[in-house]
Structures are given as structure tokens and as C-alpha cells.
Image (cartoon, rainbow, N blue to C red; front, side, top):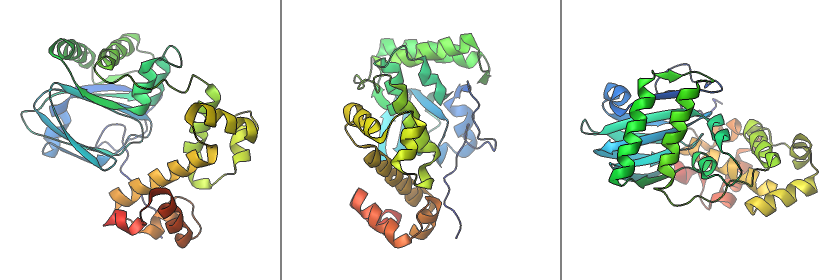
Length: 281
């Protein structure tokens, strides 16, 4: 049975979708969307976060199936892995900044809102003063060239200043996971081994803890057990595949490592309250 896949890019429409460490890119909205009749189809960036800065005009946004409209001046931060789509008009003006997911490591400490905004996302309108500042910074970042290289200090500094200028315009994000590297490693291992259905003992060993310690960490900082977090991530990935690939429930089950399509359907119903067929319809 064929595997279900969602189009994944570093930059939309380009075949080489692997984002190297330190990846950075900035361009105007028109530079790419005008080539696609102002419509960017559903896709995702699995190693990058994207900041859409709308200076003026409309933008229709879809994030993991949720649709809403933005009118400039406004911005939206799309975290790594989120399936998203945009529709613009020729009157839409702005910039798109794409940054490797490791850019979030520029957060100075666990409660730095920079890390929370880049990993959890957000969107808001911009007041005229903040919009003007963000616009100037976006112009400067884009003027450096189409792609920043790993270790390009000026590109990174300007990009960080741009992202930080947006933080004051959105609701204060919850603190990141207190900076505990074991939690970050746990999440990384879940992403890497999601379809392998590894036991909790594997994740505990990988993070240098015991199952009991890992459970205490996730309960304290994330409010859920590690198995619940893994199951919720599996259900989210299944939902994305069902909505955006047109694949059957059996194909999605195979892609996500479920040996039995019936068990996958029961799992999905338990986690989401919906049957897989409902998502496809």
C-alpha cells in the first residue's frame, strides 16, 4: 500500500527541501506567490519555521485545517511541521522569512519569549510604529541576498531583531519548557521515531533518565504523561495526512507504523473523537 506524504520544502516549490543547519531565507510575498497565481498550496517545512509579514493587503491563511484572514499590517509565525497554505492578491505586500528550526536556540533562557513564539507560533495585527520597524528590518534582511549562510552574523542578528519586534504585538506566550534539555531531546526523539512505536523505556534511555523521571518531567512541565504526548503527536500527524494527502485510512495507518488499520481507526477515534473517514470527507 502506498505511503501517505505531505509536500515538504525548505522553500515552497523547490525540489531540494532539506534545510541545512543555520538555514535562512527572506523574500517578498510577490517573489514566489506571483509565480503560483497568488496561491501557495498546503505544504510544510519539517526543519524550518516561517514568518509571514503582511505590510498591506489581504492574506487568507490555513493552518492544520483552521482557516482565517489577515489584513496588513499583521504577521503570523508558522512553527516547524505545521501544514499551511496562503492565498494572496496582487495588492498584498509583505515579506516571508524562513529560518532553520535551530534558530530558536537563540533564546537566551527557558522563559525567553523568542523560543516560545518560534516553537508554538502566533499571529497578530501590528500597530503603525511596530509595522514600520518590522518593515525596515525585513527590507534589510532581504537586501542581504536570497539566502543567509550558516554563521552569517549580520543575517542572524537582523532576523532576530525582526522576530523580537513582533513579540510585543502578540499575547505573551507561555514560557518555553523551562529550558530543560531532556524535554527538548525527548521531543526530538519522538519526532525522529514517531512511526516506530518505541516503548517509553527507549525514550527514557535516550534522554538519560528512567521512565519514572521522564514521567515526572513531562507531568511537571507539560502537564501530561510521556505516552499521552506521543499519542497526541501521532494523532496530529494522522490528521494532517488524512486531510492533506487524500490517502485512505489504511495508507495512513501503514505510514505511521500501525500494523492493523482497524486498531488505527480505534486509536484515532479515541484521540480525536472522529473517525478517520470523517477527516477525509
